[in-house]
Image (cartoon, rainbow, N blue to C red):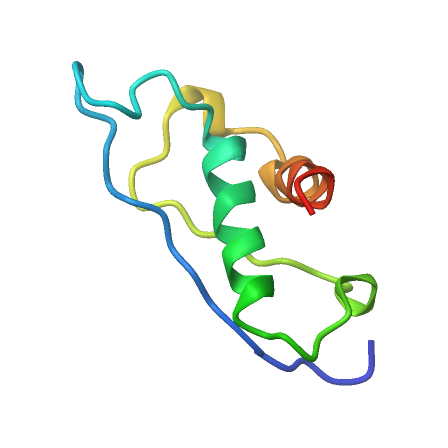
Length: 80
């Protein structure tokens, strides 16, 4: 990669409440949803051109301490 270019961004809902609708949703599934949405917002971008994905987590949970980027990217690719 010779230069970094930000072409899109997306975020997930905040919702890990004990009884909330997202309480059983895995963090990498939520990230995959955001990646898919970011790709949809950049219609001229071929997903195969994406070399790197940067994720942030405001409230990391113990299950979020693995490399979520590759897992989420893979899950997003499966949803195309």
